[in-house]
Length: 405
Image 1 (cartoon, rainbow, N blue to C red):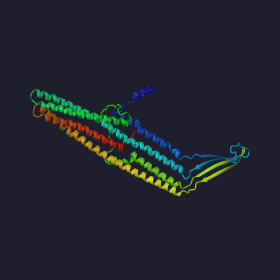
Image 2 (image 1 turned 180 degrees about the vertical axis):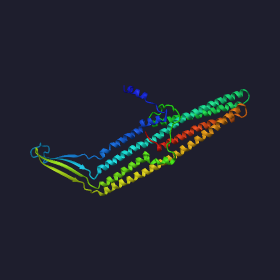
Image 3 (image 1 turned 135 degrees about the vertical axis):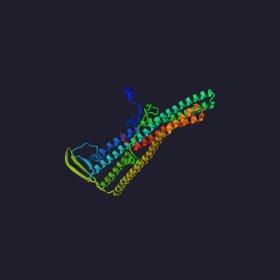
Image 4 (image 1 turned 120 degrees about the horizontal axis):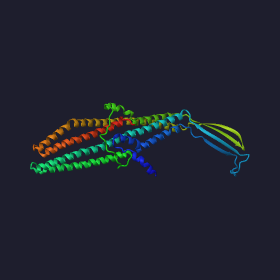
């Protein structure tokens, strides 16, 4: 019955894949890793209040004046019972420091989720680009195969008229077979991209994805590399290490405060028979006797602070390195795509049209026509590949500068 009730919700849930935005939305809502990190962040926030809370009080009861031979005897007028309640009070701002350190750790854990979201979004966008690219490449290959079929028919007609050799039609068939083999490889790449994208989205590997409505739109907001790297220190991975360094610094201060002893306050009452004979007030102070242990704990906290600062510097350099490499890939692919679109494609198109017209009147051989077709459609496929590389670079750049909704 529960399964039947859940069917409407499942049926109305949109299938991702039509746009890159649908992939981003699904990942942020459904990715298991992000869900786990979100729960860990909530758990870290739940540790803030207990970190600065008072320790639980202790209650004790003591029976005095018992007969060693008969300790189980019933109480009488000579029985003495002592009751005591104790509460330890951390002083010198230790509770505030502990709560501050826990809050800083919670901030770091939340930033870990944001950093993971940045990386997962970049991976999902890259997987979606490959998913789209495989479809687009297959479309280009299908168009190329259709053109080869037309050329094969033309060669067969010319052969029937005695104007061309039978080898021309056979060469066209061989070229088609080669393209069919490449088409199979492109379809395999699509299946691989589909499996990778579904894995990132937390779906079954063979789950259906919607067909892309067009090339993914992945804008890069930074005008140049320097501007993109200026935002590296605001990346969640860097800020997370900074928060951990602050928590480690707070812990250094807390360990220094531990040089000063805490106090324990207690109240008690002495029962004699059925009445309270006396009351007591107790004040207990710790003796800072284990100085070596305290010094080692302080040393440990200082080393952890230095390690956290080193990790922050390492994270910053790693982000800058990834950003520079991604920017180079994106910029190079963009320039290559522009060259193909503005220069190579028009030239290859004109060359093919000229070779086709010349072949029809017998001015060039069939090999020249095939070579012109390969150059023309190869440029078309190279444009799609260049756009893929540009979008992959853009996804990597956006992981450095992007914002999460």
